[in-house]
Length: 223
Image: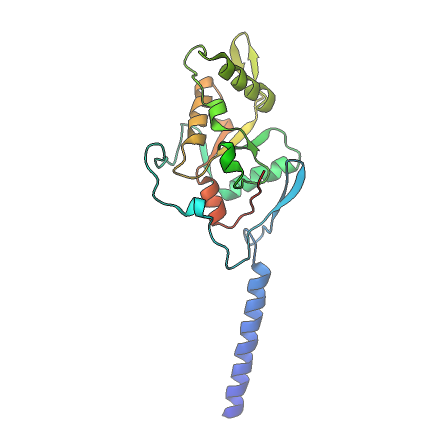
């Protein structure tokens, strides 16, 4: 009887050891089949993975739950008709396309520079929301704002302005995000772009933003 108990204890211990090893091997995986995604951020190679540090915590900036509405109102699940709301895996898929040389896609961090310094999604491009959020009703009242937006649309988004009208046929697919489902910056930019005629199927919205990204332990970088 004692021998049987000892053998059972040994088997259980071995099983726990194997289980622990398996768990360690799976640490940091994004999905069962996706270990990481390699991207380029500001000219440097960055590997996006999921932290395996069991003591890792959500940064304080994103742990806060009491946010005054307005402006920090909870955003709807769909920001505009025809615009797809995406999650982390879809964002990673677009980042992978970009890293593979697809120049028809851009992941846009719509937040202001002070937030970018706290960390952003590797492979994203920062275009502060107020650079796009200008008056789009009729003609622009502020010439400098119109110049800035025109520059972004033509030089970064690959749109064309012809005879006062925008041509978005060759414009990039944009994946926009900001701080989270309480942040209006990226959603405001999407609404502005659709008013200008940007095709809704070329606009994607990562509603969860940085709050969801860091809560899942995904890699961030500071510019």
